[in-house]
Length: 270
Image 1: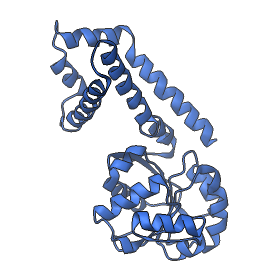
Image 2 (image 1 turned 120 degrees about the vertical axis):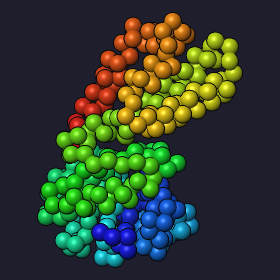
Image 3 (image 1 turned 90 degrees about the vertical axis):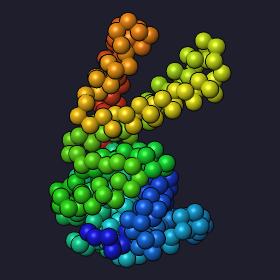
């Protein structure tokens, strides 16, 4: 794959739209190299106006005109779409699925010896702060996976993992935004109960979360525990708060959250 390739998106919903906008705004690919397809002419026209790309209603035509095909529909539609397009796929085309719970093996069972890469993105991609996990199927190459990682890096960050690890990715980053929203909301409501205006409390919690995440990325080789210790000096107010978290076994709480979410993701995949 190279930066002159043509990319087609089957489905132009929120996640596909985020990827398309990020790819274009970053100049990773020009708009004329990207095309979408939608189920009917009205949806296609709406997507065209929203995204500034050509959007058609024929999935087979889209496949024939694309080097990389993103399957960006709801999981329950994937099998039908793959059956529809499989005769139009050739070995030089790369199929990328962002459908949750649909393994590369399931896709290969329909398409045969096709190059397939699976992606688990998350909703912060819509503000170009996404986190995506990428895994390749049996016939995809390392270069295929790296191309997708590079492409998705235009809407945040992306890493390659194995298919066996993708359910953990789903739990941490796919579902993770909701967990962080919950923590931010709980902190804001605590501030409200203690006498601070809710919107001010929410701003304090949300901006602190954003800043703390940036500090983690900028820490270099410093362990995260050191960042904690730098704020929670012994005997101080932060130390008291961390002590409460330890007493309440917050590490076990979050382990259980991630473990149970991973289990559910695995069950959905099966």
